[in-house]
Image (cartoon, rainbow, N blue to C red; front, side, top):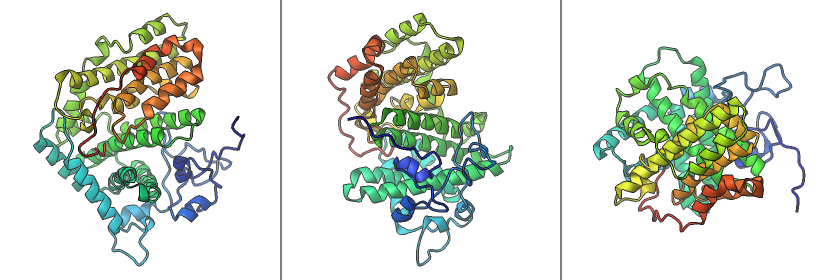
Length: 419
């Protein structure tokens, strides 16, 4: 049965957009957020009909992060205020749930296997990150948000409540981060760049999970949300570019070096998974801009495959889905590395762009035992194959072949990774 046409809410609040529900656009609080007792935050203080452009607040290479809500200054200035009779995130109160979420995050992180990073190096970095989070509200809110999201997957009875909490915390984190970027000075210190880097890393993996896990079957809407994820994760990452030397002087250095090592040289390495696609792209009749965007996206994808093979070929006696770096580096690095031009081609649902995305979905499918990924890879391969139809079957031969193979047995994680 064809989907019943409906009017999309283009100016709805961030919470409704994330939950994929229709917003009545009520201000200062929409009816959905009011009923769910959530903080309601809009991307813009005024509707598009006003004199201010929706993307006028902050623009990162074509992406627009949410503008600060009216409550963001209160959250930032009184994050550790004493509890009141009616605790709420809006007033910056830390309640018992927040403490439970922080404890859960720390417990899970302590159980992570860090590929090519010693346990001592990992412990020092985690300790520093927690210290930064205590004085950086947007980072703390994102840590609590991703912890709530993880808990929602292992506590079915509290799933809806925890997902609502995760939405509120992440919306708050983005709002505070955006306000912070507006007032940030050009000569920031490591005290600024470390939280920004950690925040962008967590937000990227979190948004990837939300995009591929909470879908309603509408492929067009899914693509819109996936491209929004590409824009946002690239936008916040731009805030630390040019400061890698400074970051290398912190406890994050082992992680930066491990990530670079995982991908280094991979773009020039032969990738059997991409061989057919690369040949088809070279023979396709493409404009110079599109051809360049596809070439770069494919190069980064080959590096992502290379990172996976490095771990697989070592034959490590450890579940790859629990690795903080190593095989999964490419899963999170590729969306950041692809160009905004490629993201626009995906938004236009150009067949070549979708074919590359289907090859990226193979990586997701290989790590489906991770709660962060789930069946996202399978959905992407099947949805793109159905959308493009038989004419593009040759372009999708490798992803569908991988999908039909006996599944790669990653085994159950001894302790579910929060990443």
